[in-house]
Length: 346
Image 1: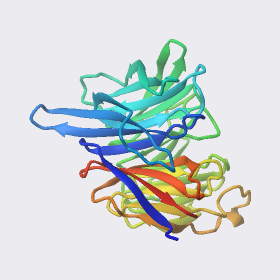
Image 2: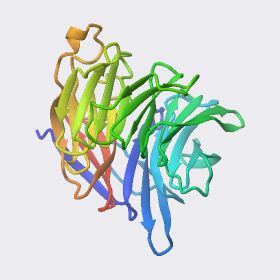
Image 3: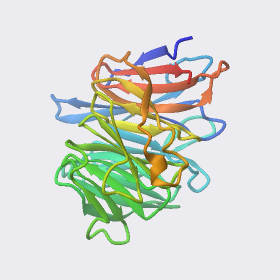
């Protein structure tokens, strides 16, 4: 039986760059895809959100909802309900974080908009990440990182600070602390910030990656494990107790744009590698361990998907297995404006 199988693809019309599955029952089949495209004639960036119901055994990518938007750079479902609602954050091309709620009738509805800085500054909100249902970290094209606090009335801007010399490609919370935010930038640097005092970073690393740092993900099951990805094509695994050097290095053969931990077990990482498709990386030995000696295992590529014909940008794990036990995965690519669904059998 084939390890990887393409199931279906759909033309997103506009350039596709992000996709993510809803983490809540009974809506685990719901996925949101975001698009971003520069309209040179109008000097504007436009986008669209498309909602899809992806049943692992009956794949149909016909959108259940389409929502026009400024260019979409990132989408993130909140991993816990916020004020008893399923919430979605969208980072867009006019420097906004837009909060949507997902209703029981399976549609998203815009609830709140928060500007990051001056809306006329040309700032793009490049990434966003939730901590529980209470905070959102944002990175932007001015090299700044912001933190939003989510109140019942909507988001409140807690603070914005200069984090990088060039674009701040990613900002992500430490999964195990609501005070710690990692950021990565086009200056080849990644940093750790304590939002109680952002005058200086807690940690700065300028030497690990040779090009822009684009993805930073702490393991959801092991508070000691950190993964970083870069345009330099390398996946680095770190032990947060010993950050002077990385534990392992895996060359993925393409600029690493997005990393996603496998739900529940976090044994595997799903990687979007721009010019080299999508990869499944086995990180056994780097999850659930406690000693630095046990973190010496080098992650191994156990599956690759190269059916896209353009930049591999967005990807996520489906949270439902098919009746044959295969894992469903969604991925999207840019210039060929394409959303794919494929399956993997470990």
